[in-house]
Length: 163
Image (tube, rainbow, N blue to C red; front, side, top):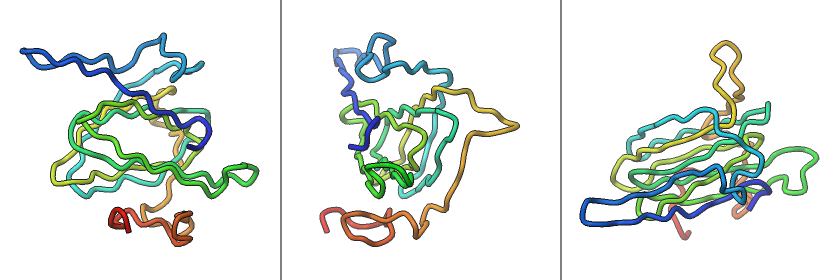
């Protein structure tokens, strides 16, 4: 995994009423470190939708929990001075197994809803969104300069699994 990218498995406790799960706690220092969550958003995506690529340059970290459906979450390091330059993490997150995925904002990152149903995603940020001066740089979802280290070709969000 890229340094700073973390996954924390969520304990989903079912009972005859449904289930209960703590999604994030301040005392989960193994996940949060020194981060403090300042904003929480909810996003819905239809099957096959790609939301990529973007990054934050002012220190924001994103925390992602898939509540419905399945998502591919990717982080890519293209920093010139990085020991992990060219590394790409690909994480499959699903409502079937709750987990919190932490992505440091300086990595280019994005998501794709995979499978036959839409996704519902909760994402939390360590910085408030600034409407007048957003901390966001963007690239096209199919940017040819983001290279998949497995194939040495531009990253393909639609590449079939296990090929």
